[in-house]
Amino acid sequence: MTSPTEITVNQLSRLTGLPSAPAIVDIRIDEDYALDPRLIPGSRRRNFEDTAQWMGGFIGQKVVVVCHRGKKLSQGVVALLRNEGIEAESLVSGFEGWAEAGLPVFAPEKLPKPDGKGRTLWVTRARPKIDRIACPWLIRRFIDPDATFLFVAPAEVEQVGEKFGAAPFDIDGAFWSHRGEDCSFDTMLAEFGLQSDALSHLARIVRGADTARLELAPEAAGLLAASLGLSRMYRDDLEQLSASMGLYDALYRWCRDATEETHDWPAHKSVSSVQ
Image (cartoon, rainbow, N blue to C red; front, side, top):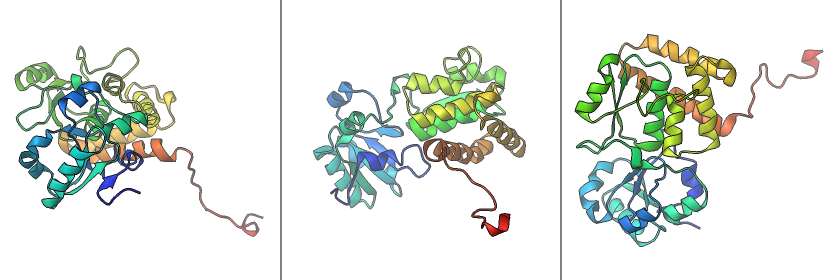
């Protein structure tokens, strides 16, 4: 039985990728991280020796601390955080247990260099529809919760990227863009090494809606319709992104948990009522 300050791998796996997910702080020492330089989705890397300096950024949040095996380092950091009123838990069995369970991880080496606030910057064309919303959703939910997205005139994307250290995405010629019949969302899943049945299903829906191949998934037509509606509801691209996050949250949760569920009306008809 786990203690009140611990969370199991299975419990955490049910929370990752959701808007209610806790902040995940990876404090593995460099030697342990080098053995497997991947991260649990949504993780931030921090040095346990500098806990006093970075803990203030997590006040008011739920935090899960991850070390190599869930022992002294995560236990100690959790104790320090809880002394500051931060609701913190350590991951039982640590990153090693998560990896051994075959749960999704991502490879961060291709991320753009963080800015002065520790955020990754991304830039794309203004007036997003599908891929340019789906990719930010994926990044914020699974890669970098603090990522910042810049929407600019199409002709300025590359120059803005160079001047501000932002990674261009979903434009012709960019690394993070369409490849063959795959869309930018597919590219990010492949390059980050993110693998799960739910994300693969969602990718098929996004691909169908974004590339006018609605036959790829029955839900693609619905995503296209909702995306076009949202693009007309909001003049401000950041407001549109904020409003659209819930749409992708719902689709992801459906892909993960509810694809076999049906709904009808009226429910529970009596035999007499249908004779």
